[in-house]
Image (cartoon, rainbow, N blue to C red):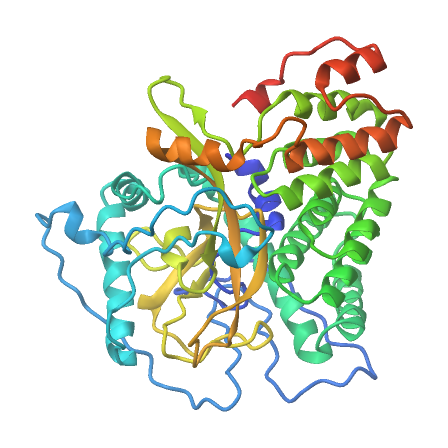
Length: 510
């Protein structure tokens, strides 16, 4: 669950940003080498919206339709150096009552994690904007003493954030060159959305834009080609993650034509996290001609994902790919308990559960990214605006209105990466849309002996012979792969296949 610097953009391809990836800006003007975004080919119609600026050292916004430009608010907060750390952290949300293991394939029932408590009473836009800017100033104040100091203190103070897959230091930072190319890739997706809407029209425009950009680039520059490929995959998989099935089906088709390891891994993630059968089957078909070593770990880890639907999809993908070499992994699942059951911690004195949680993509930017304005910020930093509740939330194709530099976060510093994203209905959402993006993670949460007992009570079959959904998925794949059948135990299948028991790989034991 820990990514390294070299794999940051692979994490972005899995979906990392907790802010809309359509609102990039930079505080200071610099002039790095330009990557000019090509014009759309004719006769594709283009709406009368301004063109995305081709330079990267300047602020670049697309106005939101129907909203008049407003003066950018600026704030000047004085923070006493002796302020206690607890006063610099956001007010924690009220602890939700323990629900026990998630037994249904319903994303609405997944526990939600939030950066801070919501106001008891609706506040006006000005107060919400000031509160957001003030919290960013507090974060800068703490980080000025030590990089990522705020995130370290926040995690330590919050039981609900403990066990989340946070990364810090060099592991969560990308270099300015890659950040620049990622910003260009995001702009390319946004332009295709503006001109082509969704579905087939989007992909026609996007492919044409990519072709023109490649023609303008030096064909002998292999490093540039690599950067373009990786950052395009990252931008597409991030921005299209919660889009309708038609758009993501086009993503599968597009990735199928990209001969790169990151495209292969993105296809594998689509094969296990997509809820639509047709989309998953298309992703699996694309994997049939890919190097197995590039995607095997994605499928194997998904067999034990604490959401049974993902495990079923992984087992099905293994069977459809005819991966007979993975029968040992499937048999091992039969030897193991339900992954949602409590496990002993390293000390042996505590217990924890692995559970899926969700985070509202638009409300929790400061939990995922460092502030975009600080004493150490550079003009090459890629930044985005923190959405303020009470203000309309622009569509992915629109970008943002002119914003105050005091409301920006850095996209090249990412503390969390999600496994997948989906749109869920949010009640009383106005003026934001009813359907909002949520990102999903796996958290390891410490539980008391009483709660651990409740988990075991709900997840342990009441009658002999009743199988967990994980065992059922593994058995179905084994029968499909081997054309054989026997008792639903690991020992019986090892005897049938004449294979010895193998110790679990280190990656599985951790």
